Length: 463
Ligand code: GLY
Ligand code: MN
Ligand code: MN
Image (cartoon, rainbow, N blue to C red; front, side, top):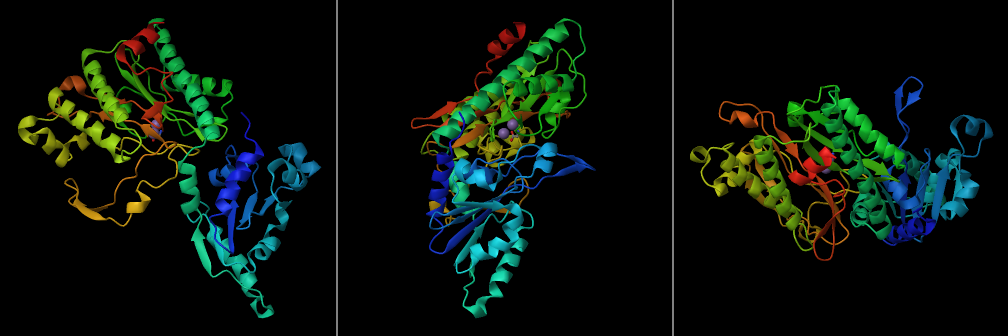
């Protein structure tokens, strides 16, 4: 589904209506990033800019006025440059193609921005995401101020546009959900492909390394039209799974060990984010099975807690409860030392084996924007002492889940070797991650084209 300009025009209109009288918003796209010498990183647009325009060329800026008027600065048509770098839309076509009110060459931006800001009250721009933008805005405002003796008014207020856009982006519309479902499906099939490759090659006596599985993922992403990974893939064999930010490297994938893959494609600007953990040769050992079943049960509990009206923190709390009980049952935590389940949770003793949160918002960015605090309750602050750091932490009420929000559900268990930990569990690292859309009655898991059940995984790896 190609986004029609009307989707972006409707978003611009919604944003414009929130700028207040005399409000102007400035949203540049992302800069190009050099890799080394003449090589650049593959270009990726800015998510806010893309959300409002659907436009993916670099060197572009959107200016939006409270009355709904929109200006676009973009690369001018230039035959010489287009021979080298590719076709540019150009300002003339931008008006019809993107539905903006007026468009100019990006070379005119410095001269026209002060014009856009003159006689306005408030300038909105993203505070946190565009390095150097605040200084540029200051420069444009200086130019306006130089003309106040001629009766020109200069905006007296600067406000963070992220506050408005984050709230809009947090609730996905049908077009976004459709794209995210397609991205999720591609990623799920890529995980299946990597699992089956691993088992098949090991059965055939062939060497398998982490980068082989990474290549299988990438092949599946690209062959279905994904433009990129949504984040650097983690392919972690054996003990590497206990390194949370591991990358796909060169370690051998060995029969008898688990492999943790955390990988998702980006499709048409939207991310997917899946983790699966599977036995390299297709069969779980008894200890791997016990640990995996525990993480799966914790994910089931978190999924059940993901529904409208629940808090963002509820899936995490539900997962922690199951994991903590399992740590006691499996002997990872000693009940004599740590006491009851409630004590394990209260003292955060489980954090030795589960040290991250159970999810995050997902959208155009893998860790998508959106407040994790319920806006209407943001002033209800309480203080809690963290039992591990002994530091006081300020806590605000967690966000209430509503239909259209998308989040990941990703509990895990990471066991490093230690004298007080049963040896069978040493080096086991497991995470199971799915992407969930909050619906009217619960949640829809959009990543289950790759299974999570033990028997299902063993079956598909035998196939
Ligand atoms: N892949 C990044 C994350 O799971 O948060
Ligand atoms: Mn994630
Ligand atoms: Mn992930």
